[in-house]
Length: 105
Image (cartoon, rainbow, N blue to C red; front, side, top):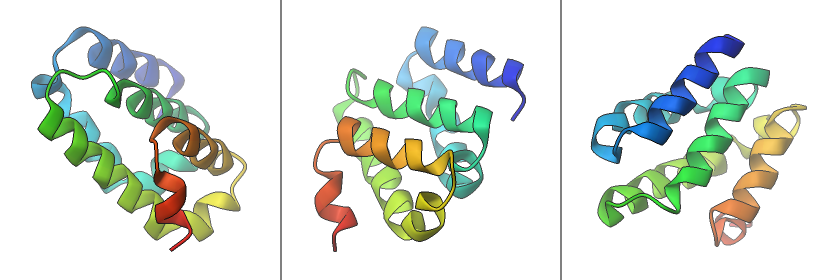
């Protein structure tokens, strides 16, 4: 993702309610490895994970959190070896709660 587009996506996620921005979360989840290992897209992932805590729809928030945890768990070996992927895992451990238990399985 280009630098400008990442800021645009972050602004949309910040301004609009979860129901409108869900597509961005699902796209990021579908292409998680690409997002996690790209300098600019990694910032979007971190922003999305940060935003998960404060969203208003609890069921959708938990669903998104589970998707991200699953994507991180499935791709840990590839992500952790990437200079940007390291930041995603580090941020997830601090920002997604009990993710460390999932990663240790």
